[in-house]
Length: 198
Image (cartoon, rainbow, N blue to C red):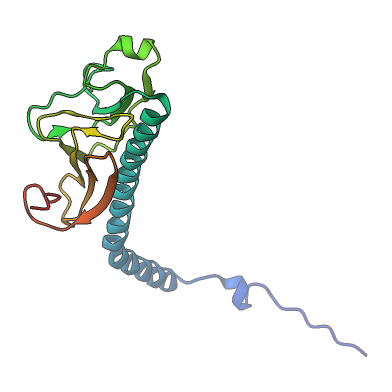
């Protein structure tokens, strides 16, 4: 004769679930792990954002250089004046604030106007940056960078990219040479202009 055994679900380990103590211990351990990992996570997110912004600027500088050669005319970049669309941000106060993004347009000066956009001269409009991120342009006496078909840059200099109020002290730097070539690097200098190589 065969005997069959059945388990009462209310008495099996799977049927009784977790106790309140077990759940509290799991929540406590999860909270401790989150508290330990949070600073590292913030640092990684900040580093990624800094890289994204510097890569975008490098890409637009390379685009301007390529288009200047292809179209046999100068192509320029300037910081967006958030209050007046299709206008370049003024140079003063120095450094020029490019935190509202930048335009890439056909031209050899900062004479960007709504008419330029209507004529199809704007190649790329500003990308929106997060509100706590800063892009400062150190371009000497200029508030724009213009690249000629002969690969000569007007307004060569450098940019600093950083998060306002950051405690990491790391700044992304993008340097534009007199030949219009751009180079990106990072700095942990505590100088007022951390990308100044002097």
